[in-house]
Image (cartoon, rainbow, N blue to C red; front, side, top):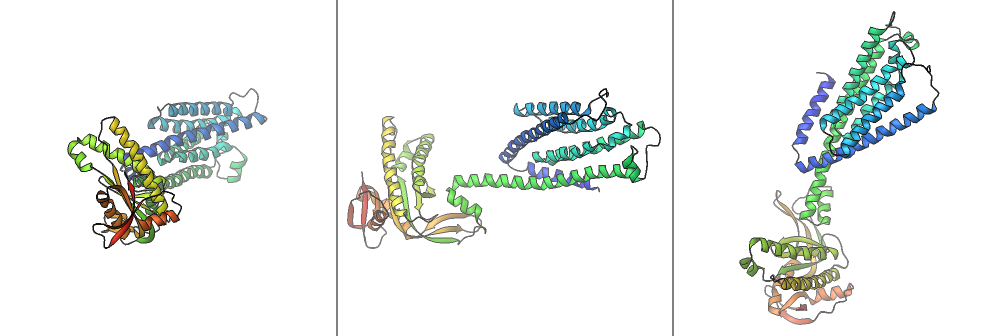
Amino acid sequence: MSTLTQAFLSILRRRVRVDAWPARVQRELEREQYRSELLVTAVQLLVVAVLAMLYALTPPGFSPDAPIRAVPLGLTLFAAAAFVRLYLAVTGQLQRWMVGTTVVTEMAVLIFVIWAYHLQYEQPAPFSLKCTEFAYVFILIALRTLRFEPVWVVLSGLTAAAGWLALLAYALTHAHGNAVTWDYVTSLRSTQIHFGGELDKVLAIVATTAVLALALARARHFVILSVSGQQAVTDLSMFFDDPVADRITRSDVPAMPGQADMREATIVFFDMRGFTEASRTLCVTDLVALLREYQQLIVPIIRSHGGSIDKFLGDGILASFGAVALDTRHAANALRAVDAVMRAVDDWRAARSLSGQKAPDVGAGIASGPVLFGVVGDGKRLEYTVIGDAVNLAAKLEKHNKAERTRAIAPHATYAQAVAQGYAGIRPTRLARSVSGVTGRVDVAVWVS
């Protein structure tokens, strides 16, 4: 099996695997290919402009009455093809078969220019095979790598190889006298054809095409993996806060149960009051809308104060400050977030009441202390979460709001720590409160209605 055949099979196998990727990954790749097509066209037009300028500045080396001017004609045809492709791409009309047609056309134009050189310089047909513009064949093939589709590199290379063989056949059939020599030096000094040299050119085209196509197939595979990975990171950011998603995706080792860091942090439990009653009276659509409004109201406030969402618990939200990333003002930031949430909830409730909708309140429980932030699970289903007495205490204090008739509660120690960290809010303190599930009595700072 030839190298080129193997290249084709490898490319086809990779294409099958690519087509199995999710549609959104393929759409992102198609958008990148569209941008690449614009880049290819821009580079080609730039090359045309540079060559046209050089041609204009270079004295002609042929007779003024030559039957054809190969370079101006070739550049005009090439530019026309490029502009047509650019128009089709910009207007969204560029189909795959059109791309293939332009790939063949642009290489055919180059081969035509090379063929026309013997007419321009009024030389025998084999003269075209000595044309230095042969080097531009490789430039056209290389430009096709910018689209990240190996098939166009292969098509360009095969067109070039076929075109050069056609030039060779034309030279042999239209040569005068002894057109072939096996003397290499003689072939360089004359228009005689050296089969070995021409075979080298064709082999160089084929080998370059195969190498570029195979390299591009591998690069394309990694690009797709990268795009898919970026999509996964985007998806993760919808389920995790950005710091957690970054921790998962940038970790040097795979996530495993038991990986954890001990941090000094503040935990806040938010809970919507009256949600159970609302779930009995509201239709599913209105209930989901209520929950969405509530979460969209609170979550941005938490994040704007440096907090992270650990999890959503139905109508509850577990947030942490200083657990995901070190924060020397975690208590102050947590209490500022609670203040901001309460103000926002007041406005939200007022707006809903005016429109005749249910307007449930929100309660919060806050606690500070050492927590473990890390991975839990059974190895197949993992979760990043916070564990510690502060988590349990915050949950219990949130429930204790009902007994105290308050909106939010924090241990006095947490409040004092927040004040030491720059928190300026003044919160009443209630001494020696008995909290269900907590051993001993607790001094608490409260947010009253």
